[in-house]
Image (tube, one colour):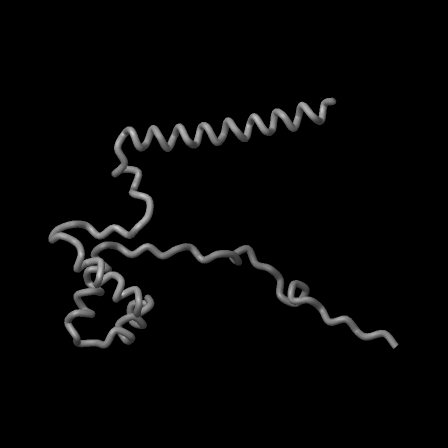
Amino acid sequence: MKKKQLPSKRDVIPASAGTGPKPRTVFSDEFKRDAVSRLRSGEQNASDLAVELGIRRTQLYTWAKKFEELAPGETFRSPGRPAVSELSEVDQLRRELAKAQEELAILKKFDAYLTRLKK
């Protein structure tokens, strides 16, 4: 007697176009400052405030720590690559050069591949 094969998840649930990694949420400097000030006021505990704002509690504490380290009036920047507008001309040219060199290396490999196919 043959066992009946169950359908796989792919057969049961059709893949939608919206599946995939969730886009990263970016919060404004003003939002972060407001959240930290509400945390420091003590009117609400951190967990309730985080749920209300739709973020993790640890994120509130991370922002609070970073704001303590900032000089007054300095804008809050997360770690990572600086904005293109903040890069100096030399840095912008270095990034463009690196991109062009990478493209050239790809084209050389493709040319070598095509050359091998012709033989």
